[in-house]
Image 1 (cartoon, rainbow, N blue to C red):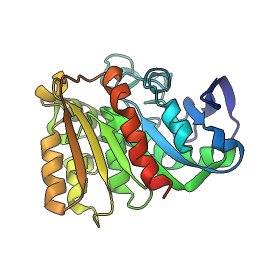
Image 2: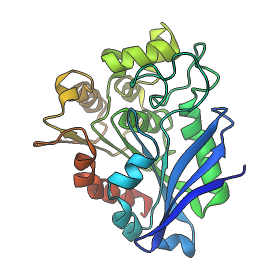
Image 3: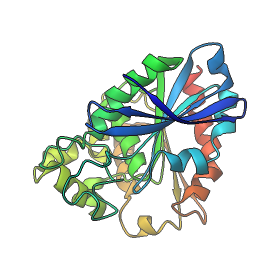
Image 4: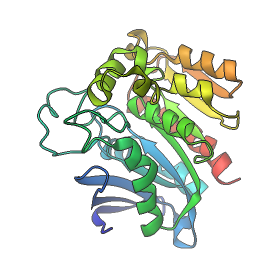
Length: 282
């Protein structure tokens, strides 16, 4: 599959690049950012996938988070895809900020008119890793995943639905129990219809209850002053309770005076890079 390079910038002796390609799953052009650390010039490197939140593109994380130095030091390829299909000419795709464009929610839609293009789960799980493996010095046996808000939800469900695929998972302010929150009800209702069993298949709090073993070390950072935490959109307590019941290790850090933005992410991103490097470089 042909890749078109959009940009390339040297950064900490590696390269931050952006590519565009025609997606088979999403049936539109998609962009992703990829950081190639210095070690990628001499051999294969493990891959860490970042999933962004509502309204974001591939640009937010690569320009605002400050992850590059840590990724260079630990020899990690970091891939940051867009958050939804774009320009599909679906009626209503641009009407709201929390549904449609920029809000794919990392599910495979089953409802019209979304089901043809809105297949972000399969794109992240299958198509994108194959693309990375075919075009870059990536060790496909060593992958981890993390994300923010909607992307934190995406990271958690991808790790929980695919035991052993990812070496580790972490999240910043993830939507932990979408079947119970307004964002999730709106997105899942639109993409998945009224069948609640379809909703639960993309809900981390439900998925962790049937996760087959405890070999998954989860790190979550949550800002204490996050307005969406107090509004009941994130519901981390429900997820922590489910993890505790299943004896699945989760480190949950409630950070003082931290809100839901990239200043928050930049403050703790090095901790997350180290968390993943511990498993990816083991």
